[in-house]
Image (tube, rainbow, N blue to C red; front, side, top):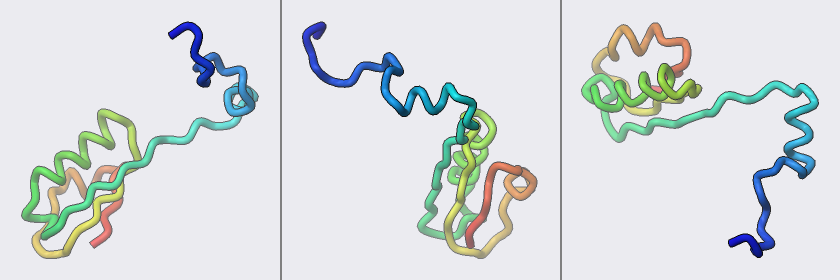
Length: 83
């Protein structure tokens, strides 16, 4: 594949140069969509916490209101709940 004309990851383009100039690197963002009551979906709550804590993402947790979510989800600064 040495003869390919596709873009290489060398950073020679303008996008690579802009990041090196000192612009702040944006955090990744994730959306966890629960098609039901978030309080009754511990798996979706744990996915949200993992994305926020381990992967360092800003997480939007979207679903229906009902039962209370875990305290750790409420207190996590990286997870925003949209009920």
